[in-house]
Image 1 (cartoon, rainbow, N blue to C red):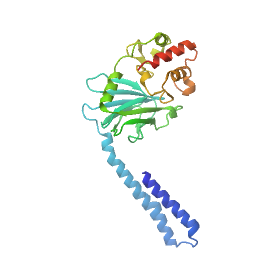
Image 2 (image 1 turned 120 degrees about the vertical axis):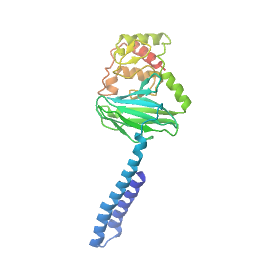
Image 3 (image 1 turned 60 degrees about the vertical axis):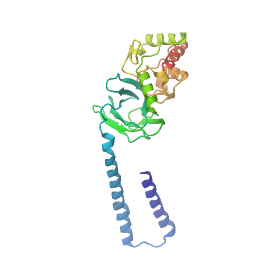
Image 4 (image 1 turned 90 degrees about the vertical axis):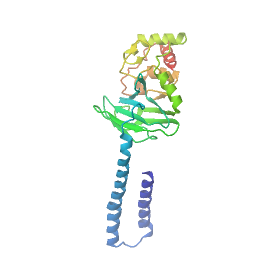
Length: 286
């Protein structure tokens, strides 16, 4: 499509330059009609038809059901973050948020849905976008072919913080991916150090567990992201901030400023010591 767009642009600009600077004579009526019909009707019809046929030929592979026993990733688009669940037969699901890891060279089926508005799941470096429609489950099959960290995003306007709804996609060797996935199924690590222990107490006492889950702790919320391994992720708040202890504190204290319209209340009323301890605890959840 990029090559076609460049060719068309060069043709249009070339004709305009020729007509404006080199051709001083009036063109015959027959030539004008030929240009309008050929360049304005026949050419775009043929080009668009070819692109449509090419796109339709790709759909069966993209929409084909995954083979039995293959990796399936369920992704739910919400305002304004992504719930990610890894589903494998005979194994416990692994849940995280705003980050996807994929084994290189392996076909993965994404099962996509939304409980609120239409979102659009898109990893530009891997394939086309797919709408996430309330009341429906759509499927998309992708095969990453090179290692690296990619960026995904929502490609459908979904509300106030639509532009603050990205996610990271880490493509890694299969053996490293399996080790990562096994760690994601483990419960939250016990806090290490006095500050982290205080932070766990602040987390539980402040009601964070009503919205967030921490497997292994008395926190089973399902409204917000699962925070069991939040300290090991690449970013915070669906790409709003890079992940570090200072950023965790900022996001907890000023959630509404960093992500307008977000449903999570800001906890800036907490004492500075409690905020520091809470950030230290969350950062240690690897």
